[in-house]
Image 1: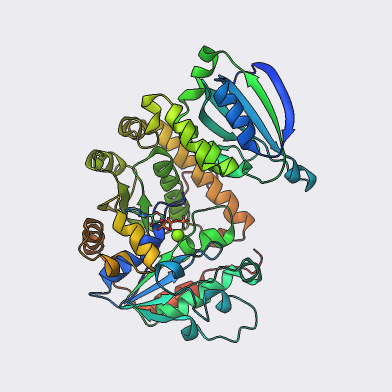
Image 2: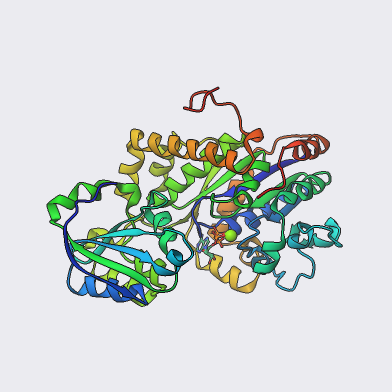
Length: 187
Length: 257
Ligand SMILES: Nc1ncnc2c1ncn2[C@@H]1O[C@H](COP(=O)(O)OP(=O)(O)OP(=O)(O)O)[C@@H](O)[C@H]1O
Ligand SMILES: [Mg+2]
C-alpha cells in the first residue's frame, strides 16, 4: 500500500497506544501514525504498523512487516508494552486514493479496541465518526461494492493461494497440497 | 460412513464455536456426531458445552508418551460426542499439533460426522491442520468486508489442501441487513451453498453464559431454527470410516512444527 509521506508532527515513545489515539481524535488528525512496538524490537523482531486517519477517525490499518491490512493487519502490531509512535499529517486529497483500499479498512473503533484494549475510547471514536462510518464493516453497500469487484477478490484469492503454498512448504505440508497448475508454482 | 467438516472463518469471533455445536446438535438428530475443539491454542468450546471442568482433554492426547486414551477425552453431551480442548498455554506448548491427525483418525472410525472447531488464524501449522484434515469446510461469515475477505482466504487455503467448501453460514445478521443479496454475490466466489442466515440473537449470548449449546438452551429461538436449516442443507457424504482413518494417517505430516 502507498501512503503519501506527509509532514512529521512528532515522534515519541508511549506506554499506552490509547494516548496517541485519543490525542489524534481530539486534534482531528488527517494523516497517519506509525506504531513500532519496542519490546518486539528488543526481541529482534521488526514489528511496525500504520493506522491512517481522516479527521481523527481511523480509516486503514496496515502491518508493514507482514504486508497485510485491515483487522488482520492490526493484530500484527497489537503488541503490549511501549510503542514508538510517529504522527504525520497528510493532505486529505492525497490520502483519498489510499483510503480506497477497502480490504485494509477498519471500523472506526477497532484500533482503540485492538491496539489498546480500550473499549471506552473505541466507543467514543465510533460515536464521533461520521454517520456513514458508524456502521462500518456492517455497511451493506460497502459489502456489496466489495463483492462486486471481481478483480479485487481474485487478487485476494490468488495472494492467499500463493501464501498457502509458500507456507505449506515452510511447514512441511507440501505433500498434502493439491496440484493446481494455474499458479506461479505450477510444475 | 464418516465425513469430517472443519468449521472455519479466518476471522475471529464470527461464531465458529457456536456454529460447531449448533450444527452438531442438529446433525445428531440423524447422525452419530463427534465434535472436536481443534482450536488448540485458544480453546473455548469447553465453556460453550459445560465442560469447564473436563479432566482429560484433547491437549492430553497431543503430548508425547501420553497416558490418556482417546476415549478418555470424549464426553457424551447433548446427544453428541464432544472432545474439548484445555486452555492452558503450557499444555498448548507441550502439545504436538501433528498428533491431531492420529486422534482424528481414531475418532473417525466410530462416527458419522466429525466437526472440527477451527482456529481463527492461518499463521501456523497447528492453525491450518484442521482444514488440512477435513474433507470439507463450512465457512462461518459475518456480512462484513473483513469477514468476507478472511473467509475467502481460508477457503483458498482449504482448496490448496484439497479440502472443498460444503457451504457458507452467514451469522450475526442484523435485522436491517439484506443478506440474500450479499449471499447471492458471495456465492460466485464461495463453493458449496448458502446454508443459512443466522440472526444476531441475545439467546446465543445467553446460551454461552449458561454453558450450553444454543440448541439446548433456546431451541425455539430463530437462530436455532436457522442452524437446524443449515444442518438440513448439509449433504453429508458417505465415506468408509476406515478409508478416512487411513487417509488421515497417510497425510504426510512430519514432526517439525
Ligand atoms: N448469532 C449470534 N448472535 C449473537 N451473538 C452471537 C451470535 N453468534 C455468536 N455470537 C457471540 O459472539 C461471540 C463469538 O462467538 P464464537 O465464540 O462462537 O465465535 P468464534 O468464531 O468461535 O470465535 P473465536 O474466533 O474466538 O474462536 C460469543 O460471545 C457468542 O456468544
Ligand atoms: Mg471459537
